Image (cartoon, rainbow, N blue to C red; front, side, top):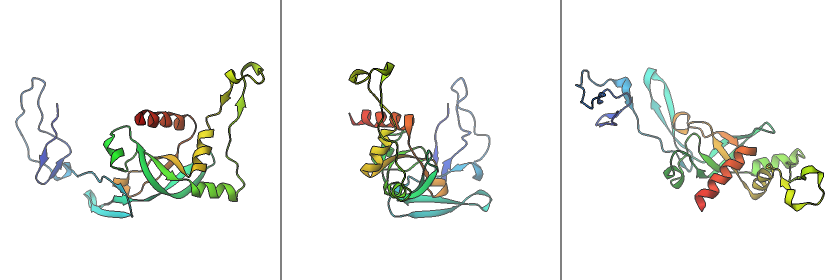
Length: 199
């Protein structure tokens, strides 16, 4: 069983102070090493771009985003990527506190501005797939067997001005918040999750 211990000079990443199987405390047999330290989380917020550069092991540099308001998001089905504005954090499977505080992390579900994609569709005469009516067993005009394709949600969102997207980059490590727009079954899944949280 490991214990998270905070030292005056930083967080310990690899902990050697732990209990053995019989819950007896082990003797500290060596000192702390510089390469074992961890750092405080970035907790990237939505705001005017603010990045801190951190010198890390080997003389390398990490770009720690403290605030971000834009990112590159791709619509995979059409294979286009546009820079767009981040509006808010809607869902995070790891912690609800990250949603309340609008913290940008990898895997977070966010709302982004859909206008760049809408403008691209107008310029290229692209029509997003709309609602289609399908009947089971070829029974015409039977409302009980009526089904709607799941792609309609994406079209509705693009028209409404904001789209659900997922962050794939690590804002606290790379200083960027890039990702992709949710589509199909993945979009349906997260719409249900968000709706459950609101209830």
